[in-house]
Length: 468
Image 1: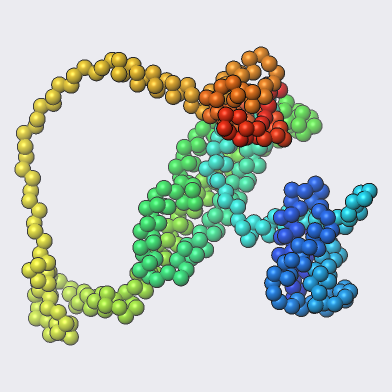
Image 2 (image 1 turned 135 degrees about the vertical axis):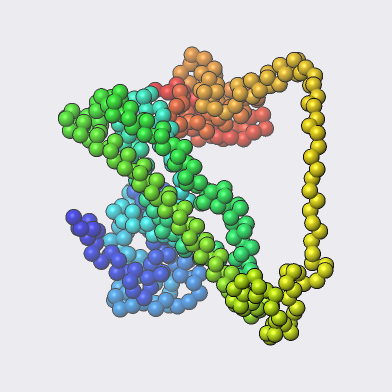
């Protein structure tokens, strides 16, 4: 199937004409407004208002091409008329649809749902999303760690992990391809000296810590063995459960489900190997392009006609004339001798000789003093504080325990009443909301529409329920 079997063949014509930039901006405005609306639709007048305001903000007259001039109806100096012309062309080429309004409602314009992926890709090119590579890898690792506890191991873990690996490896490939541009953007407009100083800090703060918030090799080697062990379990003890879940999810026979499971396990193994290769490529390319930028800056710094570059050229000349140690003791009758005197002792004047470091004398080994016995009460108190800290830490186990405590046999409880009775539970309530989307939770939350103020704190109320 070809893409133009699904979308209008003239879809991209507005983006190739005189006003392609204006069409792209208007589509971006419509997308920002419609992306969270039901059916991607908003009132027709709102779209016209946005387009008119955008064109007026440009502060320039809009020159229409031949096709647009055929569609215009009215005075082209009126930006409302021009906005209508551009919007109609977007409608005629398949970007937007006109929807009749309900009873007493205004007509609406809606984005064609089939072009939504194209609009998203435009947005990703202009404003790339920051991908948390470490978070994605940790999510896959966590899913496999708890696969035996999952009610749907095929759909909820194996298939989900396969899709996550596709997204992760695609993001890593994009990262690998963008490193050269990334380094060029960092050095653009900087002098050679500024580039060298910048990369000293860059090496310390970015490279040593992580590249783009992802220390590639460490993360891979930490998770790889665990992922392979989990895949071995999928082929062994968990295979039957995966097959049953696949049969239920995909509505296929057992033999087909077995083949699909084996193919998916093999694919995930290959995804891990692909990720390993991508990480090595990222690290290697990062080193190469960073080194090129530094070498380019060093070359420019030593050939820009400055005093430093001139001294460097003189030293290079002397280096080329010295082939053996004896050459250093010959009389110098070159032009450089008139600039400064070079001594065979390798110093310019007496003030440049560094004071030799004094050697340390060996000293006898001192006996270790006997420590007093520790105060057991102090030790017990510190242990008690540590246990209290562990007990109150916002871990999934503690949050689940808190949920069980406040439910206390009830099916549901309103969180505002819990906070009103005990203000000290505020941190734990935050933990309830934070862990409400994790797979290991033992509860569900249902947000309410009202905002409450209790004990001097304003928050959106919610209900905690037993997880079904």
